[in-house]
Image (cartoon, rainbow, N blue to C red):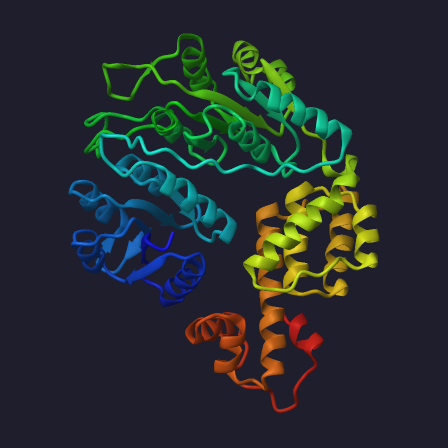
Length: 467
């Protein structure tokens, strides 16, 4: 990973600092640019970056204009565009111009990390597709639950076949992990597993995202762009949230599954991909069929093997091994000692209903690793339980928002605690936190915290509780 260079192009210094810190911790070599001319100088230089994280707004130009210029030249970098909330038209244009992915601000670290991992697995822009093999990366799916064990046994038995698999389960139960488990145990494991979130891509963009387009197919199509079927050739395609796919596109997907061929937008040549289809959904497709929102014939094509993952509240024996996995993962990630969960927290976990399933558990363990204080974790359990038990109340924020808020608060509390320990020596605090001094100042400014200790130092609990 250390040989991969990432160019961060954003007008805001705070964003550049944050992304530099985030990417550097993961071993990337990071460069920054705050103008269009600097971006072009980097990508057209003798040693261009492998990835460009490009903001949609830069002084004197726009990200779309820069993207068009780069795609119209010999740029070999993959490009992730950052757009403002609700700017769907920017996302559509960016993907049509050749961006590998588009993220909407504000985004969380998991979302960015996943996008980078997938984008760097794709071939670089251009008509030719790489044949380099992806290394085998075994997927751990640990569970003592009998129902889950049966699912895993069946998954292993059908892994080496090419039959479609339909994976059902609530949000956060591990549908994508199971899909990767199947792929990792198949003969296609050395080829890519490409994920497409059918709910996250605008309807008018999803067709070109799946099947690609040819030069001249529409205004701005300056070169051929392979679709996800091309990128997954000889591998597998995970259609996440398949229930959200528009009916017209369902018909084209059905044609591909039946006849094994399709034509790209603006194309005349028939493409015959060798792709295994895995589909995932958190909704009952039979109910959508009854309402006319999902094609019955497509359902029959996908429903060759159906694996329904039970929610975490129905397999509480999985709590212990999952906690161990997440503790080990985040202890290494944050360079923290691995601590056993206190009995009080274990009892609270066992009594909790886990509406967010494994994803919610992972976020709580992540917070505990950062701040090993039971009292900082238990209130979240109580609040979540209260929200889930009162259906007449206003619904809670999305899981992504809750996770982002919890992470931000945990980070704030850790910074405050460290500052108190070093008597508000900010440079020493930055060293203790393993971040650059500028990043610490930006965080304090964002949280409206003065750069020095107050005249009458408040307790850590009071400081940490400040919103």
